[in-house]
Length: 164
Image 1 (tube, rainbow, N blue to C red):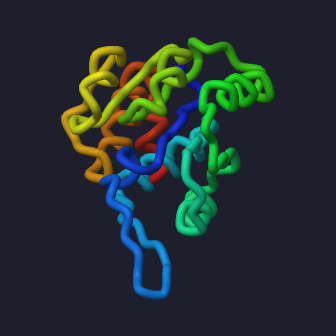
Image 2: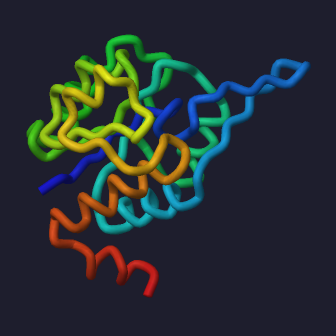
Image 3: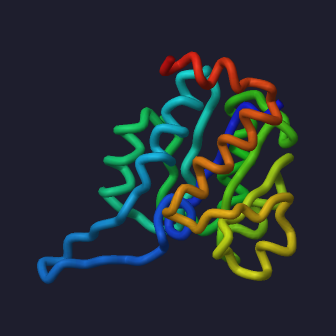
């Protein structure tokens, strides 16, 4: 059973576009369906971690809104950080699922029991993951991953009961 999901940001939680205003402020588009799926996963008693290569105040804000306590930004060695998270939570690799879309996610995705990439993930990533999703990054791919995991964990009733 999967107990922890690990999320990349740019290209998974977002469409991967970086938007800067003239004053240097950064903005990102997040999908509300992804957010509801993530917050429900947490309310069910599961864990969520974000491991991203960039630093962003916008990502910190989104993680806080969703109740994600495991946020790691500016990470170049994602698999090292993932190993530390797994150890700190007392989990086994097979209890972890992750989503990534590009080469900097490659090693991390090879560590977990269940791996995903959005439909528009890079070819090299699509070749190594368990599941290529039907949704693009930033367009509900994370929610699709969570829905699959809820089904595989036989937790659909528990997922639904959070809101109904």
